[in-house]
Image 1 (cartoon, rainbow, N blue to C red):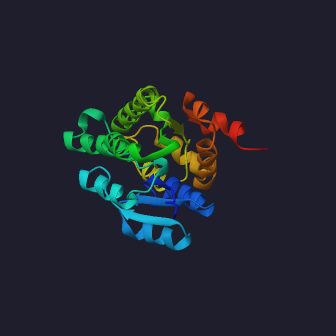
Image 2: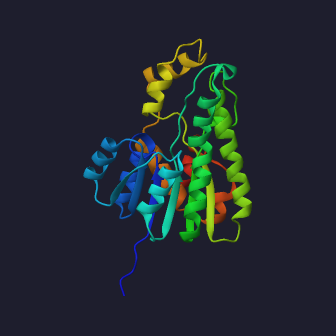
Image 3: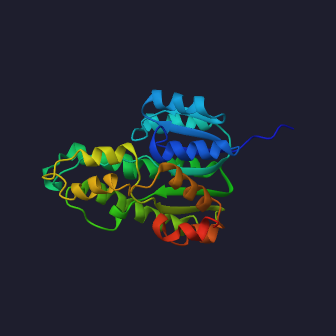
Length: 249
């Protein structure tokens, strides 16, 4: 009898951390379904590495969530990595429209909940769900009100599901990747100080070579995904604090 191969799922995988993680996992034999809104970067990624299956989908919508679920099909899921996220809208929180805030929440918060609901029933024993978090989940930054709020809420989703999924054979974790050299950081550096007062700090980090590479973050995530379930879920992982705990040497 032919065995059905498991798949791993990464959202926001066309660029940045998601792209680097997809290449790393597929490079060591995983079949990786990678979701993104733009077809071009997904096709470029798939051309680089066997095992990458692109899925163009806006995961903030029910249609996009259904498209990703259909791309997985009936295959068991090993890893589900909620990496997709947006920094917009940037600027004073009370100046943002309800529509802009809802868009942020739809991508950063509602989509991970919805996709976990869709995918968790077919996750294999020992499967892992990982929310890509941020220091902004724990520290208020003027100009990032929508982002801080959505990431703080996503952290609470991790805390709740850690309890609700206990004993299910599927573990959920949360991980802070630090300040990473991604397209999101380019957008942050392009902001006006009137909208984001801390912008000069991020510009200086880039100039001083203080950004972590997506490939380094992917290596850290890959290692964290493989730790025992109890340790994986116990507390939020931070690349700056826990690198040496999971990366040999």
